[in-house]
Image 1 (cartoon, rainbow, N blue to C red):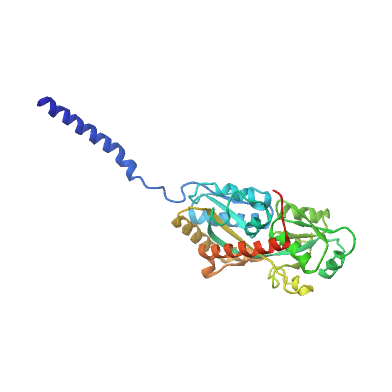
Image 2 (image 1 turned 45 degrees about the vertical axis):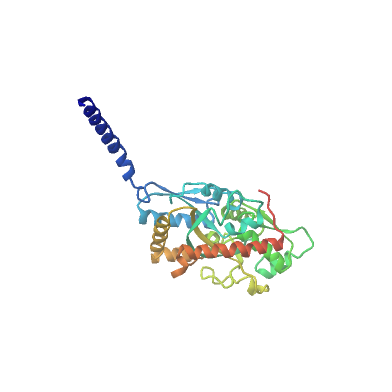
Length: 333
């Protein structure tokens, strides 16, 4: 009997030790977000509008969240390379994707993607809208859209235009221009607006269709000349530059949005924290002035919510899908 009691006592001690060893593991909660640096993946090369915006937003997130924010450029395939990377990242808010409207164009332009724009991402925040602008080198004989319309109708070889990448809104803007005129043009795709602008400035390509935000500094210093903006109305950033629609092509318009996405499955609390951090940071009048100077019309009120960005993304996936199907656009990756 004494031996039984001793055995039972030892069993109780062992059991207590086991419970003591597992209790802290069971009680451990996930570390609060963020608990390490955040990576903001940009789907285009440095120097373009999407990259410039990401570098404006990185300090905003850093200040609001208390963690460093690293901007990482993963250009190529009109943003598909960077998007594919983030789609497979851990869904904890520490890896984010900075995209523009090309994200909604790509499914209709490229072959089957290795990610789903609608299923593999969670909308976080739509910063706002920015038009594209048609630009030429300062020594170009083209002074306005009328000159372009005449030049691109000539029976010579098609006029080349530099875009920010195959399948980007700038690519689509050029194709839609050909439909509206009609014109004879051919795209020269680049891995972002920055490289495209460099070749237009040097005169290697006679025409560029790029974001107004990326072209603005070069237009201000007369390193480029603007022919037209693609938005339905003139932009406050370039008030003297008429729209395409004003110059003989009524109904033509293509604006571009820029927003942040997180991998699907990111906790709602994390999405809301990121959204609120951006909303608070973008309320700064100085930052607003900078972004307006780059051509952005910023979202306001209910349009700043993740759900509003999700609705916009779903709408443009449908809208651009119909346009690319009508144009018969197809790009090989």
